[in-house]
Image 1 (cartoon, rainbow, N blue to C red):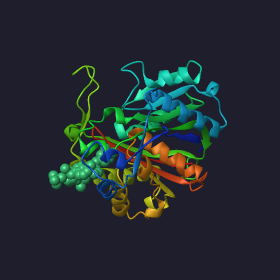
Image 2: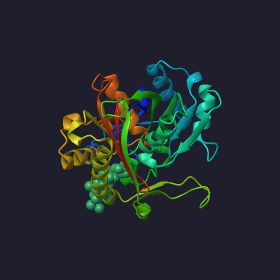
Image 3: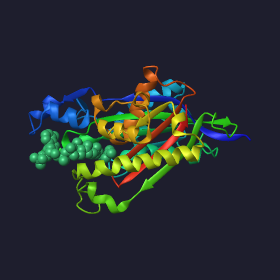
Image 4: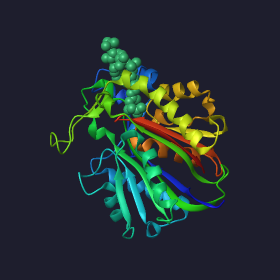
Length: 325
Ligand code: ACO
């Protein structure tokens, strides 16, 4: 049976130049390198320049993904940006990215699912690409999380960073089997009753301000391993693969202990888990495509590999998807 699949044909990542080490943070809040490394695995994060908006980070990642796919801005008919740190309340950052890249008139909008945004965005894009409504799509995760930090709160400000990652998605003919290239299955979840565990205390229709990130870190941690594990199993089941068939796990990079906690719970060999959190911290919706881009660039992840992407974030939202590259 011939089916249309959404195939990843190019990936790219971008981290702003400015690096902030744990020692740098220890100069402004009561923390130290050893505490941050031991609890999170993070040793540094990148911070966007004052002249860089989140759309600028998105554009750099998109250019790299387009080059890897052998496509140009002129080919793009759909742009989805997963972000929680938009340039403006409106228009959507995707519309700004369309303009900055010089793409033709097409579909462009943002997806807001915080750290799960890239997984949500991919599955939304699949609804266009795998139905023949898009011939060439950009799905971008881009964040300037440092702009949401309360720099007096050591429990949150050490955890986040800025960055962007992007993939090009194109339709490809498959046979309806798990050998097909493309998005094979997914599971998305949201439990709005857990809002108070992780949120930003501002917004256009409440305070009229952007607000600052607030988190009950140890409670988020407890939910993360259980929720992500459940979504991984559900996505694998929907795709028709076993978790043990997966070549590479590409988790949202929040915290090394969450990554290893999920791997241990599901019996996944830690050598199959792409870990990049150490050098860019939690970049929310950007972290999965950043990790994917790094794994492809260094030759670990190859065309034809079975990938499992997973995330959890504010909402609480969480989810996973299975892709054959
Ligand atoms: N430096 C030094 N000490 C600190 C720091 C810091 N940066 N932050 C907190 N502490 C202190 C606390 O004040 C507390 O001190 P006390 O015992 O004197 O009161 C102590 O460390 C322990 O605090 P906990 O919050 O219980 O520490 P925990 O071991 O839970 O680690 C952490 C905190 C790293 C935030 C952990 O809970 C975590 O990673 N949670 C997941 C949160 C996360 O990753 N969120 C991202 C968004 S959701 C997602 O992406 C999955």
